[in-house]
Image (cartoon, rainbow, N blue to C red; front, side, top):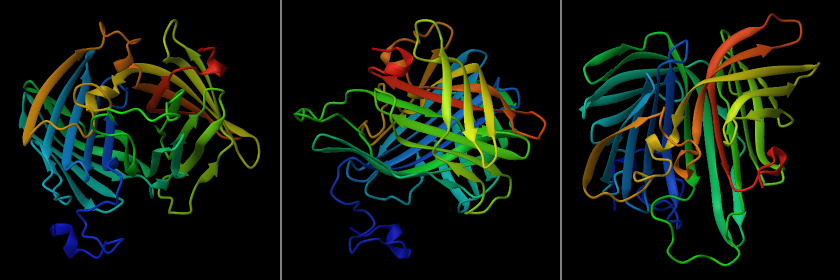
Length: 358
């Protein structure tokens, strides 16, 4: 099965590009977010390809005035991995690892055109590998990059100028649970808990990144923090796996009311305080729910979904995975405090004993 990708020198095995190994859960995904300087307006985009499922999907969510407006699209891939369009949503790589464009053709009252330009070379996070008993639950690589954003969005005739916005993008590929769950459970492969935090933040002249996956007792199995000056190259910035996050949870919820990240430096430590100002539900871009990543919806399906964030049950399973748009303050020894904006992504499934969640 030959496809357009076979004309590029990017093969990793003797197989055509259409084939991605033997695991049905292989995926290849783009993620973007962007926000206004005060964090009151926000957009997120996800675009995924699932070669073994022969499905591609794309999602856009715009948060404004307490409502999350979502556009979902899914199609049969027809084994063509170089086609970066699903319904009205398309991705264009203008300059690899530096400039990308997202286009939302008018559909269901939403439209837009956004250009994302990297502030520094992307960081490559440690490879994520997690087994549950005999099953390989996760095995993927991810790059992350903070971005300057330009362009526009439109929702129900209201135009939003995105000039001067900032944001983050990531690219990940490998193995994660996608599509319909397996109908037969695997003895010894049940998930006992899942803890995840991710906090990419934009400051005036640098970016700060932190992530942690931990087991229910709080032991990290994948973590890193990076302080990255604008314009840094592949070897730039300060990287450490010793950063820690202290969190105060909202009453009765698994979401943070505030947080403080401590990053050990060569001399002393930097801290970043987080004050969430708005909530974005990750299900709006396919992380769970009816439009979960890799789900088969037929030859082509497009639909809109509006979520009232003021009335949504934030304790419901479908709403546990969020990005909290947050104001942040960076304090570094010998430097003035820096104000910034970013997201505090959070997902706690099952127990997490350091937070008293049993």
